[in-house]
Image 1 (cartoon, rainbow, N blue to C red):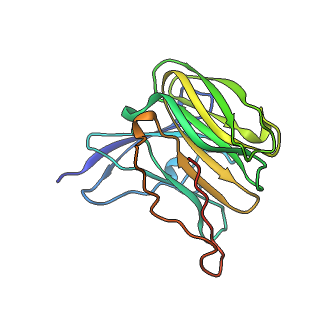
Image 2 (cartoon, rainbow, N blue to C red):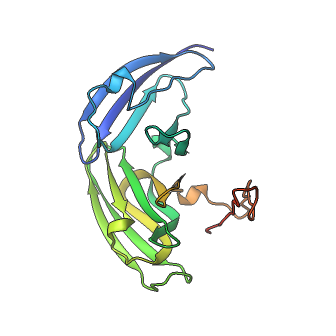
Length: 219
């Protein structure tokens, strides 16, 4: 095994130009951690920054992202980096909501292409939703940039629960974060190729432990 030479580029939402661009080396079987709040490579990034990161290397890489609250004892949520080769023109978000059961989602979409794309989002209601209407939204994303479709500002009303289908003029990747006032979770939006006829859910529980943790499954 040999070291991987990597390049890390940070893009602000809506911009095609990297605001941070640096190279590094990862030794075989090890990892490197970069924190936007404390790593010297990101010293010039202002508070309130929102965007995406692209990592390239001369070896196959696995990338994990964690989001934490400054001063907090634990990470808020985490999700895996997505290989641009797995980008697709149609993605699915099984759980989308606005102020339903105290939680609201946001869909972060990355355009890894050298040209701009337009993403049309179809929001389809769940029968448990307090509003039984479907909604649509269209977003333009510059090359090598990202955009966020935040359900807290619509187009659906508060109390809406459902799913979303993202259809783009070019391949995209996306993740969904689901937040209440005190908790957060996240998942990567799958393409049709990621689906299956038999799917296993590795962890399910009902009011388990003193924290009363309970699972919900959105299909």
